[in-house]
Image 1: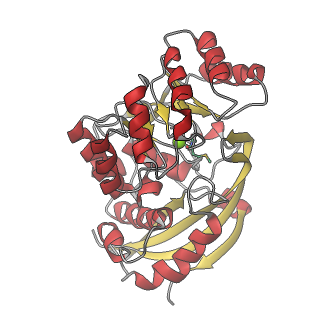
Image 2 (image 1 turned 180 degrees about the horizontal axis):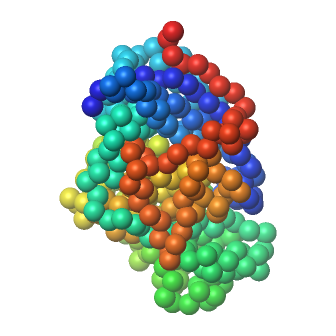
Length: 373
Ligand code: SMG
Ligand code: MG
């Protein structure tokens, strides 16, 4: 493929349909960075888009919107030799420590543009064979158990085939027990603590075993691999890592240590879709179940995740919900939908979405020209 040039960095602001509360805070809207790249093919210019999953604040991980924008414009851009191939982006940026979400957005925009220029879909590029993937939903912390049960009931009515509950100290055993009672033994259920517990909570976390959960996600700090291995040794519920998995090497170490019995794969957290595929391949070889995480993406990131989640190693249902679970209106013309509990794998060129230019402009808060002319 011929490579692409970065053209524009855009920031948008989108309100959430309802506040989303996790152990690290409550969000009612998102600021989102988008990157546009351009690839030339036979005299035609093809636009590609990348979405940066960094949040408004450095609370999920160290990255956040303002820092990612600065990293892209002052550190990444000068280091890229353009036009750049998606397969070269990570190598050209290797000197920059960290900032996987900023790097991933760049690689994503370039990959989308390159694939569109040659008329190939991301699904074809990955070699996936599934045309749809099961859809799970992540349910935030609520003000009361009654409100939580109403929310879970609504998502089951929407067809979601797996429920994930956010937990934190003081909001764990009771809400999980209530939801298990509501949904019965047959509905796959899992929990995510976003690093809210410590090693001193291991006995407490073992009490989750009685609810027959698929997994407990990132109960301890990002850097506490040994603590997660200790919990995995003590609990029957499989330990899944999210925030801790920042690279292929860390994934290998965590698996080797017994800290990662299941892996939540998020391309933005590991530096891009190409690194994500490598981690997927590692897990497949090591027999570690993988599922696709979500970062409240727009239809851009959601479309790319749907194709990634169709790879063979994704044996568990991901946080790949309908656009309308978070957004009243998406920036793409055909928002991701859940039909019969599944999301379709896009088969159009690139990531397969079409930007709704008018709506995108209406929610844009700043645009930076990245082209050098
Ligand atoms: O996109 O469906 C989604 C959100 C899934 O819970 C979700 N993501 O830790 O896995 C996680 C969280 C991170 C985002 S919270 C701001
Ligand atoms: Mg998580």
